[in-house]
Image (cartoon, rainbow, N blue to C red; front, top):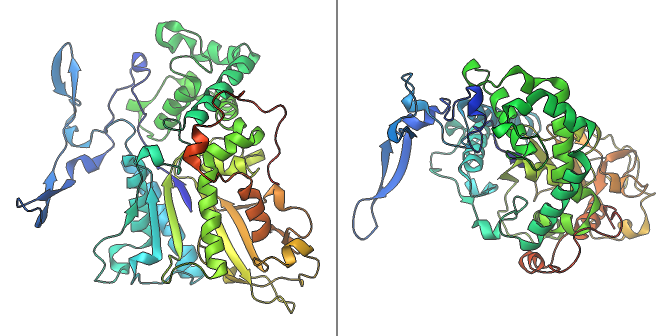
Amino acid sequence: MHVSSGERTPETARFTNTGLPAVWPYCSSASAMVSTVVKDRACVNWDTFEWRRRLQVLENGKAVAASSRGEESRMCAPAEITDKGRETMLLLGRRIRHLYVNQLGFLPELLADPASVYLRATPFPRTLTSLQQVIVGLYPPNKRAESIRSFQITTRNLSDETLLPNETHCERFIQLIKAFSRKAAGRWNTSGEMAYLNSKIQRWMPQKQRVAVDSSPALHDIYDSINSTLATSDPRTTLPSEFYDPTLRSIIDRISVDEEFTGYKSSLEYRTLGIGHLLGEVVSRMADHVSGEAPKGTARIALFGGHDSTVAAILASLGALEGDNGTWPGYGSSVVVELFKNTNLARRTSCSEGGVLQSLKHRSTVGSSETLADVNPRTNTSPFNGFYVRLKYNDHTLNIPGCQTSGLHLAGNPNFCTLAAFKDIVDCITPSDWKQACVSNLDKPPFPAEDEAIGP
């Protein structure tokens, strides 16, 4: 399961000329900070250090408290998950528990082995905090064995990070991002849609510059501020009403999605560098489990704390960022990849949701309403025969376009893609060496001669 962070403050202060504060008072955790400290020179004995954070700002050359309303203990840092964001992720964890513990019995009621839950997050405080809140919802302290004192969370240096489209260290991907952004600017900056945006909010832009894909702040950054303020429901952190015009928000969403994610739909290289390595990890985990090569004690569920760009990149690269799902992912969004096994290949059974077991490593017991005699020879002879993958986005099941052909999904149910077909789709965009791919093709054009279809 891949989750984006909960509600947060903007990445940087914007539109302060509208009266929007630069620092927001929605982070109660600032009054309950905890750090790890060493108590001896040998670094053997450790302890926790509790402290309260107080943010300061510079006003007229003088350092002053970031709040004069008696809320100094609740002030947020830039891009910090808010109290509301923590609640959102806690509730997501509880929904996961309700489905996979209470309804399906796939995960244990009481967690006895923390290794049965694999956790990984990008090296950003908001994603780590969001993931931690999900875990507290899934397995609160009273649902863990007394022996469990901590969880292991895997992280990477940002230079090695593939849990998000790496826009800072993958040189070729940076080239592609900039090229597709320029292409979007050329398509939209002089459009009627952009003219509408300017008629609404240009007067609030710095130096009254025109709103554009590549303005400063850029259009997607303007969207970040709009969405951050909408998540507060507090008049103190609200932009002028023009920013919340439904038509304006719809236009910004459409253009921002086009700028940021069209590359995944049209370029094989974009998909490969942006999200291919991560999806390759998912398939590798599945293949190891199915082939029996997974180590003993493998996790039953894997939770990844990523970003909205992670979620959208996965959907777009599988052909699922379309229609009602074609908008920018909201706070606390999730993409779930479920692995199933049909244990009733020789006889007719009913397909029951109660048989679903979700994991990136483990299979479930599901029956088909029909036999699988119509499965094509390639899939039927595969070691993955009888295994299926289902994709869910924010609790809704999605069809994977590359699995809609007869024989590439569970007979009678196109939601269940055969593992072999899913692997074929992902293999097309899985780099053998992501770091090497990031420094390859630097002298090549950024765009393919024609759009490159998703899948084999």
